[in-house]
Structures are given as structure tokens and as C-alpha cells.
Length: 97
Image (cartoon, rainbow, N blue to C red):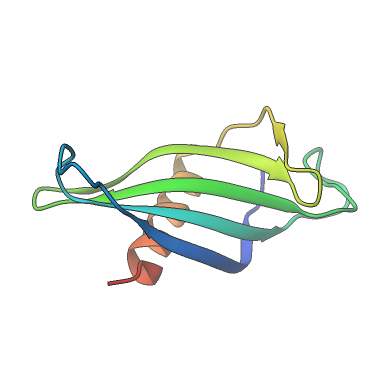
């Protein structure tokens, strides 16, 4: 289990120039603190890229991946259900309007 501690973020509202998609989309780059004993740990640091969608009916994560900061190497790990809920809540609280 990965214990997530989100220490910071960058967020950008993604534009839909053709108006094809419903709702608003946000791209989050979350900075994570990972315990040195965790298999996800990297000296360069770990990030989580998240695509968060907010529309009239729901708010959800449509895509995410872990990456090594500095190299941007994508890491093959998945969030557990409770971790995904924590990230979803974080995105809801920190989206830009």
C-alpha cells in the first residue's frame, strides 16, 4: 500500500476549443512525499499526474499516473481505492475556477 502525503500541486484548467466535451477538465501535478522504505520511493521525488473532470452530474478522476520527478519517467503503480478517494477529494478542494 502506498501511503500518500500530498505536499503541493500545480493545476491548470484544460480548454476544449471545440466544445466537444461536457464539464470542466483539470490537469493536476501532485507532489508526493513517499517513505524511503516504500517501493515507490525515488531520490528525485515522486509525482502524480491526474485528469479531474467536473460536470453537472459528477466529479471524477478520468486518468492518472505516477512519475519520477526530474526524469518524468512513468511508474507502473496504481492507487488503491482509499488513496483514489483521497486524491479525488484533494482535486475537488483545489481546482481552479
